[in-house]
Image (cartoon, rainbow, N blue to C red; front, top):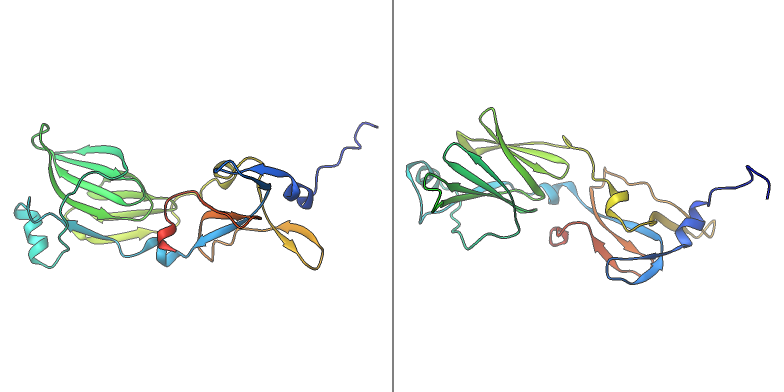
Length: 211
């Protein structure tokens, strides 16, 4: 073979390679995106409060009609963030628990911020800032009913890293009888998973209940 004669495989060739999927099954490497529309992903953000552990501040929210939700235990807990006498604990993909941490031996649950895709939290300039995959959700810490979303403030996920090795977003074309590249259309929504040629669906995050 002469030097320089190597040709990179085509999309069709790459799509027909065999890949291993998260359930250890094997199928060709072509995958198609599964979209969650933006409206469903962003949903209705709100803060719920504990009536059982209410203080003067949270009781005022409850009296004004805010949702009441008691603490039943941490679910998918992630990052812990401390600010003044408060403690915030991420519930991965669901939101943020708020605790009164005055007594560090026995924090008191105050409420929960519901944010789909939540992964990080901090306080910045009086705002509770929650990272939610592609968005930043800002809640005025002096008015927890004031919630604003900075849409697409964060980068899109790295799907090459999230997908199984060597998989490629591609779809079979009846006209060419070959697999052709599928370009992700973010106008449709957020790609939360993929379907392989065997019809199996896999998800990057546990958000399929929002579909």
